Length: 401
Image (cartoon, rainbow, N blue to C red; front, side, top):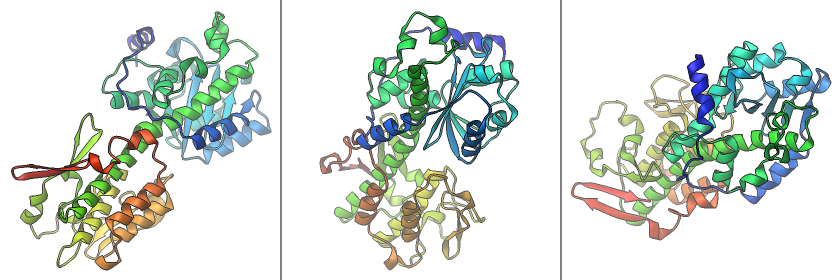
């Protein structure tokens, strides 16, 4: 990281706001209610007292936190004045200017790989921490990067702009009065004391930043899984068994928003040796519709963990390895921190060796939808029966959802 990188970052923020092509995912009523409850119990920390140490203990026990630092716009050119950390339950606003420094125990949280940290324009925050506070920020996921992937461009956008667009919240209602004023020390959070509006704004940004990542990455992944499930179920309604459900036979279209299931015939060309392809196949002597259910579960495991199944123990989302008897569940040391137990139970049902114990795709579609509260906007373009249709292009067949 050199001065040129920091200067380029500084100047990029002055460009015009981007033209958005991103799908909008409004906050659900229960999410808004939870946000309001969290904003009523913000913990403001300005001295290293009991509240400070309790906050650090609570934060250290989390698997993922959301970080907002101000002023981060200037990168290394300004020291941090205030650091906001949000967990699933609580928002903490650390007044670094009043504390006098980022003390070692707080610094350890920032430099450790765990908990994972959600940030926006993480390169600026890392630049600021490294050059102004001698800290190396680790374990980050950047919502700006997630936003770029979702809208298919890399034009600049602030955290407030991204939140406003994705959640359909008016930008002027997100910003506090001080940010819209003319006093620079208020705009960059260096003036003291911080107003209640500034504290609420910082907490709101940190809370919604975490939810923004969920919308752009996790919810999209969850929606993709449900698309695959509904596509297979649609095949069954047409009395068609696919026979080779695996990630390589699921194709992405329309900026990765539309999934197609293809390569039906490849099932019949498979070798009988136990290779990576056959890891997705059920151990059934006579394949049936329930064989696809087994393959669906192994495929979902790979999508959720971004790891291929393996013949070594303790690999994957459900901590499984593939044995001659089928998938074997290991201990829970590798589970995703926010994995619903119901989803693990569903996967275990689907990859049972006895095909008669596996659920139907109808059941899977309904159960999976119950596990995830899909925002309405994520469902509208594929949830209706009219949006499902079969295509046949010579030897290549697929289902469009």
